[in-house]
Image: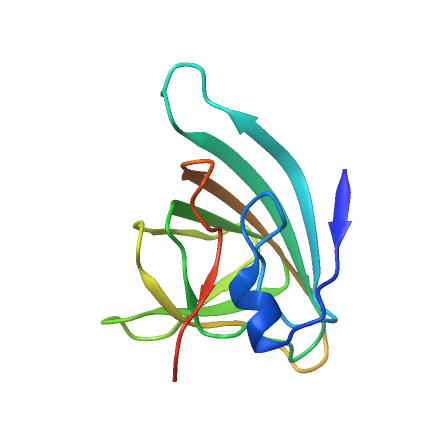
Length: 136
């Protein structure tokens, strides 16, 4: 299991690829890769499972995913907003889907006092970036 902590500078974040851990989250945000497996029954695709730990009040930068993403709140509550939709707060046990290429405008811990944990499952090509920062 690999635990990633990124030093976020715009150029470094843009230069990252999947194999180099392309997670443009807050530097203090803990991202753990749980599984990274080539899908033998889906040529040219892989499955990636990550766990994201948010400190109280913490958020990720606005971003998009080249792959399809499914998210499940393990603990706490997460506010998420995809472009074209209203922000929604999900509690532990709730989940959502993001189509490939969706612009994820908001991803944050909904609580200012309690941590939150998110499980993300993605399907993408091995050369696709997991996360691409959005220009504001």
